[in-house]
Image (tube, rainbow, N blue to C red; front, top):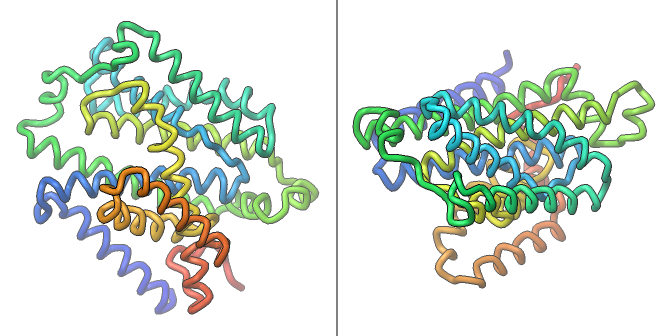
Length: 323
């Protein structure tokens, strides 16, 4: 192993160790912020896998956030499944629902696919708003008994939620890294660079896109379940919010650098810094975010990570093999 690889490995271990120890040094507010950072970063990496590597520009990933949240609430409240078991089951159920959804979405391509995924998410929102058992349009809250059963004491529950969010984020980031270093990742890279050329060398592009779509849907559903465990309440408007779970996620990926693992990390950091200082500006907040996105895309289409690569050719997550 080269010195650079040892340095990357050491930095990764150090960062993970600091984050794992978060409940022992972070305040309650800091932990909540970090949980939000973890699930936004995981959502951004999943959308980047879809759009940056598979060419599937989806504006409807909020469909799977909402499905995961409602699946978790349903399993916990009506099937009596403990929340810790309901979380992964919600991801599995979301992936199963995404299977027939994909057959509909994949009949579209290009901009029609993007619009179609958004319409599908709106359909799911309207459907769940009509279910009285889940609170209809006003939503429903998790019973206190189910929440208290997660762990003894509020501090223990918050720490457990923190560690689950961190674990999901690490699984997503490291899982995508390992995937991109595999033969499947090589196929995705070929698909990203030139789909026609990928087909000509035997890459089954449609099947590959289908599998990636289902896998990202399942993981997005798991993240959605965790989001609403933390919030303790779910409504159709919050669960299927295109702004929260698609627009902001796309912003993170675009400003950071689409098609790279480092880009969404950089974009996520910048997004939370901007939100900290600009969120009180109301409508101007979204206008400023949009302006920043346009400027960065005009200056460097590869995002902020592309600007860094102009200065120095470094890679935190090498996904290619050198001879």
